[in-house]
Length: 288
Length: 317
Image (cartoon, rainbow over all chains, first blue to last red; front, top):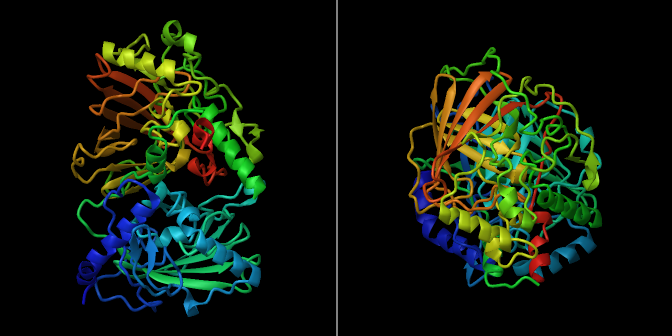
């Protein structure tokens, strides 16, 4: 079964998922993002590209990831295997996680904090509840599209959710100037090519972002190494290795494929759901 | 945790306080330095120079640029009407030198931009020649109403200047911008409030007029070294800048921009604003972009919602 047939089959259920989030967040309807699919494919192995469908290449000979991408998974709600859960009046279907081995190696006190986060997820999830920047790696598997734009010296990412953006420096510039700056919700990203794989080193990530709606969290000591590997023209294998000595006993890894969006005239429109939330909250308010 | 809170709040406060800094002076490097006020900036015909090309022959403008101008800061016009409300006619801070935020929200010394053009091309309102906005009576009344009720505190949510609410900046957002090009699309990733603009060059139409965005929707095409950009689908709730002018546009606002690639080191532009419900004649605003110093980077993140308590402070919950 091709990708498109699969998308068609899951479309109805996925719309429910998207709607559930909107209700939970009290925000205006999203500008029709292609919705998430209910089940993540299992941690995929890179498979050889079919003849004639290889990823295009840039003039420099690197894979050209330009275009629109989206994860088809419920990982934004829980990166581990999960049962169905309520999110607002609707819900999220059960789904496989994206954590290799399904275990997140929390230290005991951190696991207790994760459980507290879970209990308060409807109000405290920075992304789904507050529409704040989703952070890395969560931005990648939010149930909305993102765009990659690419120059030889820099790669840019535009995410539909919270209008998040990132730039990935490919020139190996020093990070020294960032000393003393606050942490960044979307981190500071430095990339390099290892063969056809884009390897991105992400640091200075703000501790307030979560991995998912289930309250999985990290501190500002987190270090993420992302790997974007072409599978074929329309698929990228995404992996991220996560370290945070404050929270985890060892590095761990997530893995999921990204799917190219090929809709005619597809666009990521400006969507500031926090602005919409504020408009709703303060609609008839009198200044104090 | 505490450090982050303080810094984010400081950045948000700075954002609000320095809105007349259309260049997003929150970066560490000195793009504001010496940009010059409109009145003082010398201008002249910019020198043409070599232009890189993409394989299709169009100018290659990829890279990191600093944008100057494009705002609608009037000359002395608003003083007589708006001064009573504490409204200022000229942008305060922008182009005045070393107003740049550093670590911990402090003020850092700006550096000299290597590629700042000399002489500097025109910026600000270039038409009408008197640099006063030709409001319709209805729009002028709206503007005065806004000025009376926007501060302090604002009388209602609708009178809150939109950047206080962390709205995405309008199309003329300034500051550092990363430009990417691929067939069919030119992408601009701005530093300021992670705003983006996409110029679609693949011939697609604008979406339905019922869809509106603070940044509008832009299509474009090249004419030689000129990039012509057509922007519609604008939200209508717009601001020109705190302490300056306040009339929202109507949703009929139509912006056309002509970017002229003068050389690899300079792009000039003229934006034309047409909105018959707001202006009695089109308004033209000029500006330019010059390359960021190669050895420097834009700040990786300039957030707003994440550190803003403005609405809670205003409304008390």
